[in-house]
Length: 98
Image 1 (tube, rainbow, N blue to C red):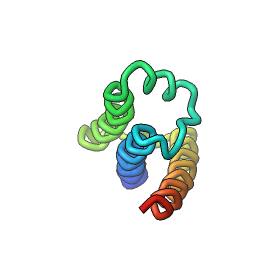
Image 2 (image 1 turned 45 degrees about the vertical axis):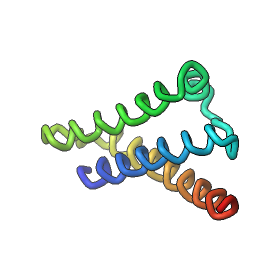
Image 3 (image 1 turned 90 degrees about the vertical axis):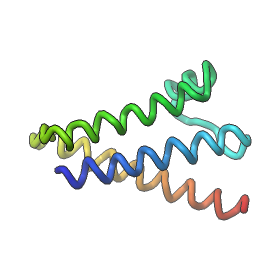
């Protein structure tokens, strides 16, 4: 589970940076209504919100408190699959704009 949390952390940080870049330059739109509302309030708050989620995941790892339940493992795998698909979408539009 530790490796899954670490991989999810990396995906989330990458997504935060690339999504912010895409929104700032009007290359993409944010599909998550909650995150879109945060971005509309303040783009820096958007980045801080997304990176704070990664910090929480890292804290679980560093404090050796990574949950081991089947439910958490399932949710983590679902998030990893979702974020991996999003990273590939980001890669697709990055290749097309550069």
